[in-house]
Amino acid sequence: MKILVTGCAGFIGSSLCEKLIAHNHHVIGIDNFDPFYSRSIKEENLSFLKTQHSFKFYELDISDKEALSQVDEEFKVVIHLAAKAGVRPSIADPSGYITANVQGTHNILDYMLSKGVKKMVFASSSSVYGDNAISPYKEDSFTDFPISPYAFTKKSCELLLYAYFNLYQVSSIALRFFTVFGPRQRPDLAIHKFFSAISEGSPIVIYGDGTTSRDYTYIDDTISGIEKALDYLVTCEKMYEIINLGNNAPTQLKDLVSRIEEVSGQKAVIKREGMQKGDVQHTCADITKAQKYLGYDPQTKLLDGLKKFYNWKREMVISK
Image (cartoon, rainbow, N blue to C red; front, top):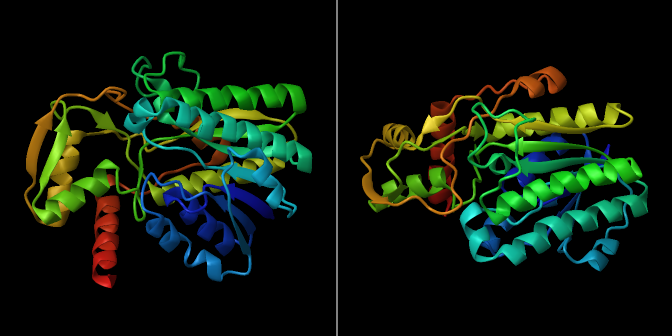
């Protein structure tokens, strides 16, 4: 199958593309190397993919509608991962997030229609639940009170997908990701930052009292869920679904730090600051729907995933 993957140079995108190619798919990848973090990291993510005959790469920005016309290959389905990421940065630049995430998604949908393609797997986020949902979060929970521009854009994209399903019969599955971590994780995210700080002897900044919790989900489990969603989508004639991809096992921030100390064999220096605007208190995925429809079954426990991440990070340091 030929698959268009947006955001292919990122943490999740590059990992997914490698798995798709290993499973004999052909991938057309799009990325704009957004300067949110170093281009060199994304280039490294793509280094293996660019050696593969079944991978074709386009550097372009999906918020530029005309740029999409550069992609002239035929494909059967889109996996749309491209987005400006991060809750806190979105507060400083809401218009940039609306342009990249909402307008970008709209452009992709229109481009799909021009190509006669009517199937999309979309990367949404647990951030859409805000602070009002009852834990564990279910897909039918009330999500009308996002507390960051990032969350708002992801919720807006889910609504946009429904409108295109209703108007143009574009079938889609919006996957709500829950705090994905593992090798290639973005350097601004907590696990990556904490391991870097502890190895350098720098303080780890804890926002709040350490009792906030996240449903950390290892990258391999997320990739498995995306592939299962892809398989499910292509077998259905018409559908619009929202499905959680989490681990159903939240961990408090203070416990995360303890486990990072355990894995690294070093003691953390803690610096405490107040809660940040846009941050939710807790996340926890109800994965019943993913289990029922996709056969989703996350396998990696947090401690095992932290060990894999730590080993990867050490290898990256040694290779440099």
